[in-house]
Image 1 (spheres, rainbow, N blue to C red):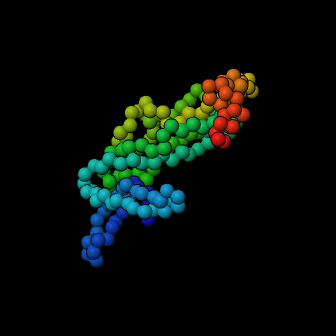
Image 2: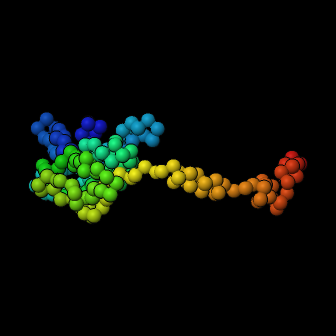
Image 3: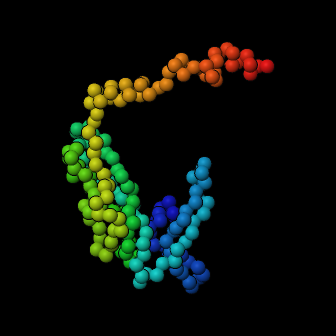
Length: 176
């Protein structure tokens, strides 16, 4: 159920034959290797009181700056915290990236369209997505040069031995 509903869908949990409760899945623990669900806490929801929870962002559309100008889409956040009545809780909030048609444009929290009754609790100026221009060959070459310059020269630092010993001396002493 968790893999289908996620952590922001109200579930009707049957307690007894004649009792049920509205719940949200919270505090999910998964096995580190297999990813198998090991534990999930259920939070009973009062449908008449507002709740604070996170809602995933769903990126839709195509950015011409990405597929025509070969830019790279950078996303800063994948979900936002919201406050709403449980019945109005959206499964996700769409982010239309088709507005990113050049490298100067970006999408912020204030640009999101949310359903009525849903309040986003994140700073309205926080960046959600932008497109970074592709790097020129000169920029790539300059980065490569910076990396080569940062690689230490072992001969200049006395090699692997200590206090300027040669590698041969350090090896023969450790063999004794």
